[in-house]
Each structure stands twice: as structure tokens, then as C-alpha cells.
Length: 486
Ligand code: FAD
Image (tube, rainbow, N blue to C red):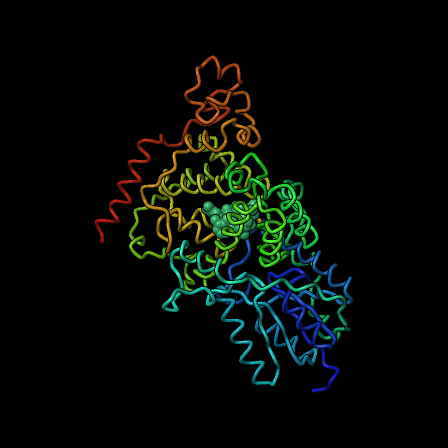
């Protein structure tokens, strides 16, 4: 191996130069550093990204390339099954080592394992790091050394374990030229067709978000200044900007959870009045670690109910009802506002995700996988672990789930968390003329009030798709039928 061999950094959902252990290790090697990304929709078991996540990926890769260029390197893009593409890159560059940060899905782990074995056989060092989680799945275990299945004790253990401090960005990377044979194989970002052309459904996404590491850093700083105080209470109010909205940045690794963790701890250390809000916020970051642990230990979480008795659940396949839910036309304002926020911005408030999800699974008795798939396609933060876990939590089939009899009443939830109706007015403008007392239940508004607000139920806004009471009873019966199978 010649001493001027370069080292490689393979970027995968860790699109940042700050606190990137794989990049820092490459920089510390003193060798030339060649950076690349593989767009892989061909490997067995790798789930293709949904539309909104593809849109985000475009901006994320663009920003990463700019950041690497500022440091003296750049990002070269390839497409194809990762194992063979990476092997060709290693052979073609004559690299002595390759570094990457770990992923936790079964297909991704299988790719990494195969590559490590094949490269080791050729004497090439492949080294992986934790760049995605505060604590990796095998680090937080109970006294018997086993992974936790329930969040509360997991959180206690996570809080008791110090989080490694984030790494600074390398100051400079010794870049280098890629061999022409590999550049001929590389693809330009627009050739990946990640952004929609026609129709351009991403207009609202562009308005709502800035992608990339600098934007993530700014959002975190703004949240610390303006959002952390009061987070524990404000986080459930969908019409406020009461949460950090860091989820897509965390999903694509534009900010690391350790950076977030330490920034929040630092803020609370400077201002002790933030302690409770900081604790609540860190527990949400810990949820993210926990769902990744569950995905790691139960790789079928996105595809199959964790609790096998749910295989026999009497789901109802009603395409029309599913379509009404997707379009935000169920006749329940809080559900419709959430589904429209999702469509317009690629994001939905957590409280409303729970309400809209519960409505689909419990009021409509639709298989939770229909909801998971729709969210996968439309969320900019679509994440295999968080999405699958959350949907199974709602359905009651997950490892740590909501009880089957918790069926959110969408009117009560709306009145409690959006008492003034501001969230409804923002996303369901046809109801904007109703006062708070009726905006969550327009069917109860007096006819004169509806007329004055320009609302004709069934025409300008739908009647409820299913009445709450009977839908609730139907769901309870269906869930009880599972118990009889025990
Ligand atoms: P904040 O309240 O600011 O929280 C900070 C971070 O903590 C989030 O960015 C996220 O990374 C993590 N977090 C917060 N809540 C949760 C949670 N319940 N579970 C796991 N991690 C959490 N989150 C995703 O990142 N991707 C998904 O695909 C996803 N799908 C979901 C589907 C359903 C049905 C439900 C109910 C929730 C889902 N969530 C998902 C969790 C949660 O809704 C989002 O993480 C949160 O709304 C993101 O907004 P935020 O960054 O402002 O959150």
C-alpha cells in the first residue's frame, strides 16, 4: 500500500462536518480525505425514501458539499447497490482506510457487515463510529444486561449515563483528485431527480424550511434563545412554535443529537430556571435513541406488528376513507388541519400526529401500516425508527404502547390543545369564520352561524366521516376481539 493512499469517508445520514466522528478520524489520519455519498435504492431490504425526504436530501447533500469544499474537500455522489459501489470506490482510489458512522436498520447493518468482511480480507481498514445517537442500542441496558422494552426505566438509565461531548469540525481537510475512472461513474445531484419537477408540490416545503447544517445550527440556537423556556408546557400547543422543529435536521444528521444534548444542558446550566424544560426536551431526544434501540433489536418494526396477536386484527380496507384522511377531509377539524399541515409543509406537530394517527387507526380501523406509509412519503423527517415505533404505539401493537382503550376524541383534543382555534384557522381556512366554541365541531354550530361564516356542511367542508361515539364503540369491540384470542 503506497503511503500517499487517501482515506475515504462514506456519508450516510450524517450530513455535517461538526461532531462527525468518521470525518474527524479521517482528518486526523493526516492522509488525503475523499468524501462520497451513495444513493442506494437497489440493495435488498433498503427502503426507498419517500417524496418529502427525497426533497430534503437534495438540499442536504448540496449543503454538505459546500461545507466540505470550504474545508478543502468535496462530496462525490454515486448511485447503486452500496456494497459493490463502495468496493469499486475503494479499489479505484487505492484507499488505505474507509470511515463511516453507524446505522441501525437491518438492511443497512447487513451492508456494513458484508463490506467490513470483504475489505478486511483485502487488508483495508473499515472503521465505524457512533454519529447518530446519544447512546447506541447496546449501551443502555438493565441490570441483567438486557435491553429495556419500556421507556421510563430506559430514560432513567439514559440520564444516569454521561453523553460524550461533541467533536469540533476539522479545521481543514487535505482533499485530493478522484481517479477519472470513478468520476465517470459519479452522478451530478440533479441527475438523482430528488426534487419534484412537474407538478412542483414542494413549494410549501421550500417556504417552511432551510436545509443543511448551517440552517440546523441556526434553528438550534433560536430554539435555545426563544423556545426552550416553557417547552414542557408549550410543546403540546400546535398553533405555537413551541417545539424545536429540529426533526428533519436530526433525521439527515445535519445536527447531531450529542450537539443538541450538550447545547441544552449548557443552557440549563447557565439558567437554572430552565431545568424542567431542559429535562423534558432531553427526554424527547432520549425517545429517539430508544426507538432506534427498538428498531435495532426488532428489525421488522416498520413492517409487522411487534405483538403477533395483531396479525389477526380486523382492519377495514376503505380506500375512500383513507383518501379523505390523507387529504384532510375527514370532517374533524383538528385531524384535517394536521393532515393539511403535513401536505403543505412536510411536517406535523407531534400532538396532532397522535390525534390524526389515532383517528385513522381507531375511528377508521385502518391498518396502522397505511398511516405509516403515508407519513413515510410526506414527512420531511420520515425516520424508520421513530415513524414505525410511533404508529405501533398508536395501534397498541408496539413494544411500549398506548393502551387499546385510549381513543382520542378529536373534538376534546382540539378544544384542549388549540382552545382559540388558531391552528384550525391556519390550515382549514374554510372554517375561519367560526368562533372557538364551534370551530372544533362545526356540525353543532347553529345554522345561522354557519351561514354567516360562509360554511355549507357537506359542500364547503365535509360532515364527519364517522360519528365519534359509534366509531369508538366499534374500535373497542375490535380491540376486545384480540383479547379473546389470548
Ligand atoms: P421536539 O419536541 O422539538 O423534539 C426534539 C426531537 O426529539 C425531535 O426532533 C425528535 O428527533 C425527537 N422526538 C420528539 N418526539 C419524539 C417521539 N415521540 N419519538 C421519537 N423521537 C421524538 N419523528 C420523527 O423524527 N420522524 C418520524 O417519522 C416520526 N413519525 C411519527 C409518527 C407518528 C404517528 C407520531 C405520533 C410521531 C412521530 N414522530 C416522528 C415523533 C414526533 O412527532 C416528532 O419527532 C416531532 O414532532 C418532531 O418535531 P420537533 O423536532 O419540533 O420535536
